[in-house]
Length: 196
Image (cartoon, rainbow, N blue to C red; front, side, top):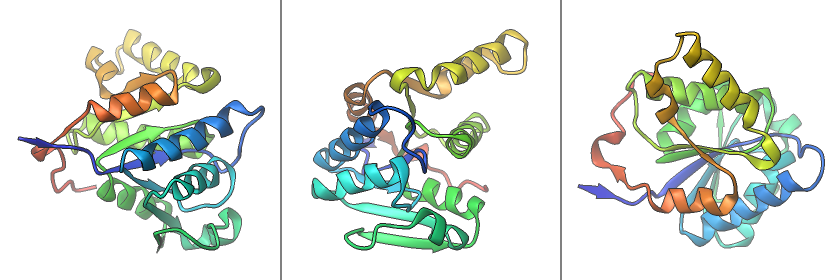
């Protein structure tokens, strides 16, 4: 038995990056999640792509749940109003754990080291059998290509099994990512009480 996804975590940058493509993708993703009735779970900030995806989801009438460590409240400046829920947690690990608990699927949008850290950790937990929730990487302007090359290098050199390719899906556009989410029901057994 399965049921549709209800809540999607988006990992993305606290900067906007160069050019306009990453910002446009963040806005389109926030809008698309809201229109599909999916709650956005994200890092709670009001800056960079984090702020763009949250503002777009809220503007489209979506539910937004932010999770932010207390020490980042000043730097990442949560949106002053309109967020459905803002949860302040004590640490970065607590943020990732709470986002995991709240989400049925994960999308890595463009970002920096923090975004890669979040993506790798959620993939590691999946590899270890702690969950089987869908994980997508959005490849806006080739952002995910170096990561894909690293995964392939680790497979070639024997550090990751061939099955590592199946831990996540690559989406070239926001539209493709939203379609993959629509096609990904969550098995009832896919969210065990993981010991993270």
